[in-house]
Length: 331
Image 1 (cartoon, rainbow, N blue to C red):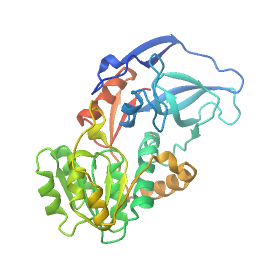
Image 2 (cartoon, helix red, strand yellow):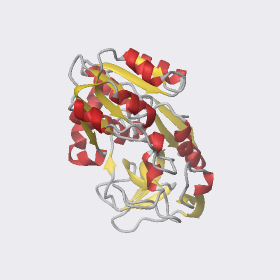
Image 3 (cartoon, one colour):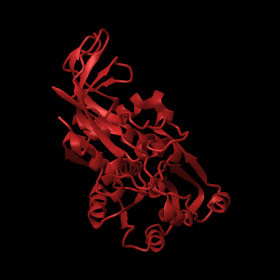
């Protein structure tokens, strides 16, 4: 059997292209003592990976040119020399973009196959769902009757944030980039959904939030965030999760400075990375699974098929091609 690996061929300037990816073919490896051979089933593509394509210090080391790209993968153990992970186990972990890979088991989590679709452990019950759970409930701490705004609301994180806010009794407003995504947010129970590409975002948000904004979950940044800051109520809470509007910028964007608005409204702005909450992940997975099985949470995936389609699925993130979690089914 042949094994394919996707390497970072070069660092992008601005928006990445297919030229940044290189395919390499090799023999399928054999596990040594204390190792397992994994077969990738589902591969996650996520916006944060764009930052790892750049050189420089960040909260996670950058990808190295000429080395495999890595991210969330659901895989099956097909050969084991590790007692705790017998053949047939299904695991999730941070693994290389590779059809077959070796692991000593560190960083792998064995997942149940009877609680939800296994791909959900890359989405609702994985990093995006946990990002929504801790960012909203710990940082924003929404209270019943408050108004919550979510940017990037039709993405894997945003759609969970909105539904969690509804569980907590809030009025929820989401922004998304197409009429189809707006309709989906309405289907999920969002009170208001705005197509930021066709609406005057400042006017639309002001109309949707006549009593102001108490909590803002920011996945996007840019003009949407500028408009939300004009609507902040006293003691508003802002969870700064992502800035996808700026990820491909070649120069630092210049916009309104928010400090004065944060000061006069006594608002809290907190950036966070979901790994900050790593010790609490089991608690979050348990609660999200419970709400999912109770029918309180829905989730959407955009699934692309084929290992060779991983780069295209990743590039599609920056064109808004996905609703919910973008995943590639590779086996």
